[in-house]
Each structure stands twice: as structure tokens, then as C-alpha cells.
Length: 224
Ligand SMILES: [Zn+2]
Image (tube, rainbow, N blue to C red; front, side, top):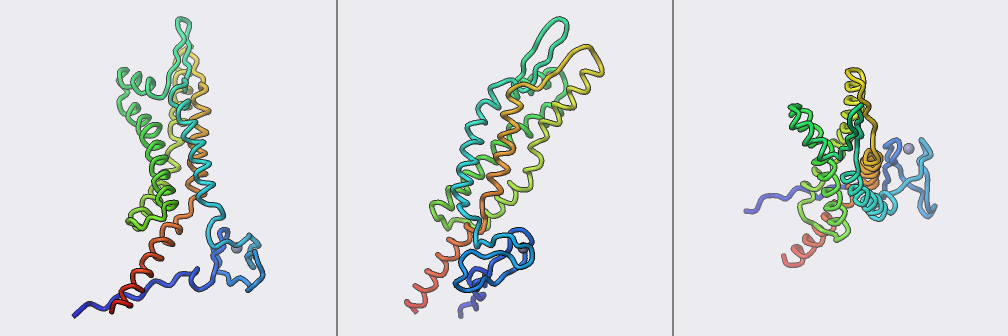
């Protein structure tokens, strides 16, 4: 005897309801009224974020291009009476590691190299999977998106580390530390990745997965 199947999930979209992106109110748009607004906060209502995939690609491509100068240009310039030293993110990590600040080196490495790269690759994978209408592991992909959102706030850590170093060095000695051009590019990568994550609509993952499920059920019912 086969186990009873759970009923198919009821979605707001299937019922013709729209969730307001601004205040989360579930709204019933008027039939034939075209684009409508939320009756509570007047924000425009959309079933999915408009042009989600296109906007996400645009932000992602800009972030990927700027990722190159963010890593190749100096992020920090330290000057003393005797020397001037330019450091990229990676050379800064090596400098900190050799200088004995291993925890700080590890923190900068994770926050400025590992996390931004993971976020970019995860978003590329998610956007590509939605664009190709993949039905592969929707729950895992949703988890990945939540992780990208959750760690978003940590990628500015590097800028805090630079600010901390500047303050420490200037208090302790006559040396000067300035943020380099790489820091601006890095900041832009962080902001563009946040915008890309914001433009991506994770519900698109389920749209295709559920459509596929419905098609499979239809086929099975016909075969029964
Ligand atoms: Zn609203």
C-alpha cells in the first residue's frame, strides 16, 4: 500500500494574491486593473521582483569586474619617515601573518577574500540555475541564498580592519596609513553584491521546481 501523499502546497500566486514587498500585507489585486498598489502602504505590487534576473546579472557582472582591481590595487598605503609601503589585500594578509598577527591575518583573509568570492559564486550559480529553469535541489538553493544574505553584513569587516589599523598605527607612531584605490573598488564590490542579492527573487527557484512537480503529477495521474 502506498503512503498517502501530502497535499500540494497552496501558494499566494496560485490564489491570485500578491505580497507587498514593503509592508508584507497579502493583497488581492483588482481584476483587470493592471498594475496596482498596496492598499496599506501604497507601494507598487508585483508577483515577483520585476526583471529580477536581468538586474541581478547587471550587479553581478559589475561586481565581478571590480573584484579584479579590488584585489590588484593597493588597499592600504602606509608611510613612515623611511619608507612608503603599498599593500593589496593579499599582501596585507601575508604581511600581518609574517608580523605575528595571525588571527587578524586570518580574519582579513576570510572577510575580504573568501566571503566576497563565495557570495559572488553562489549568486552566479543561483541566477544561472533560475535562468536555465533548473529544478535541481530547490531547498538547498534557497538555503544557499539565505546564507548569502546572512553573511552580507560581514563583508564590510575588512574596511573596519583598515580603519582599526589606521587608528592603531597613528596613535602609536609617526607612521601614516591611508586607504588606497583598491579600498574603493572593494567597497563597490561589497555594495554591488548586496544589491545583486537584493535583486534576486528566491521565489523564482520554487516557481520552476513546482511547475515541474505539477507536470510530473499530471503525467502520473494520466498513467494511473
Ligand atoms: Zn504595503
